[in-house]
Each structure stands twice: as C-alpha cells, then as structure tokens.
Length: 158
Image (cartoon, rainbow, N blue to C red; front, top):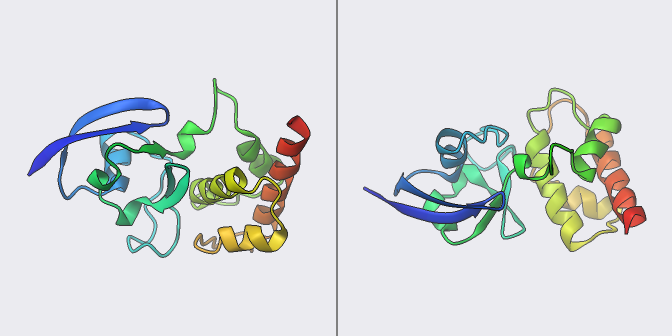
C-alpha cells in the first residue's frame, strides 16, 4: 500500500506518495535523489546512512519513511548553504577527515548533531558521538581532529 508522506527535508516541505514499507534511505536516495546518504551495511551497524531527524541522529536504513512524517529531516546536502560548505564540512576537507569518503556523510551528520547540542565537546564526547559510525580508511584521528576544528571555528564565529 501507498500513502502520502508529509515532512520537511533540508528545509523544504514535501508531500509524496510513498509505499508504506519504504525505508527512509530509499526515499531520500530514490525518490528525492539525495544520494549523499549512503547505503552501507543495511543493518544499522555502520552509520553511513545517518541523517538528522528533528536535530537527532537517525539511521535511515532502519527507519521507515512514514516514521518521520511531520518531522524535519536533514541530509548532508542540507548542510551547505548557497553553495558554500558548512563549517563542519570545510573542517573535514581541510583536516583530511575524509579518505574514500563513503562514511563521511554519516560521520558529518553525527558530528553535526553533537555540535548542535554541545558546541564545545571534549575528545571523549566526540568519540562517543561517533561511536556508531564506522570508517575503514582513516583510523579516526583525522575525523576527530576535523570535529574539534569545526567546534573551534564555530566558537570563534560567535
């Protein structure tokens, strides 16, 4: 069966006819064309599909699209404004927090959720916030440094 899904994605209201059993991941990628959200493990174990739902990190591979009806969903594409990378995205670029890039959107979204609730996290708090996101390339040092850099840059901008 299909029903109308109403929600906000990256600041824009949406109403789409969606299968009742469609995953949020498939809705974002296949219906909306937002392919920054990655399909990794298909079991909620790698974090590559992390998006924000009402500012909280959520795994899009284990969330039905209709579970987020009426909510705000943000993807990696929604962080950039007017063609400019967000402070966090820029920090990942400058501090080499990306290797192959596959895990990066999920890492950034999990880090964004952390920085919204705690603008000055400790290294241990960053590690805890990113614990559900796996990277097979970097060893995490550059990722953590990227988040620390973004936190300092946000603080300096305020």
